[in-house]
Length: 163
Image 1 (cartoon, rainbow, N blue to C red):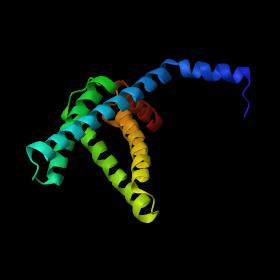
Image 2: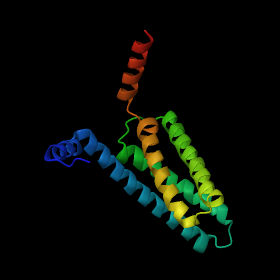
Image 3: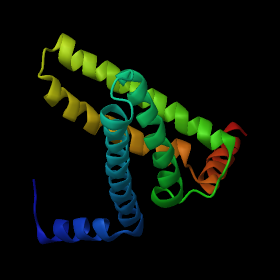
């Protein structure tokens, strides 16, 4: 690998490119929202399972905590991470589709890592969480909270390709 001064300048210019900076900023926001969302999930679950309903069904309480944190997650990503202007039922459906797809991917990858490969469950959890977080980030960026301008440009290019 050549680490010449010329290559260093190219890499530095690439990192300073506005689009790279914008996507890096989005990724940091995505991670912050994810951390806060997890904290909300854990706090709600802990409060309900230890104090409000200590004899309650833990699976149901877990599901309720996930629902509450998912609402926060959607609103925070829409308004802060991706700064989406669209406010529609279609966007909510796309969000739930991505969340459901990533949850299934997470379950599949965990099953493969733990049951098939016999890796330690906590190691598998962290690896799978990282992979799924990146899939979620990209899916939300280009599917859930896509910019209408980009969709119009792609449709226009598709029309030109067909003609």
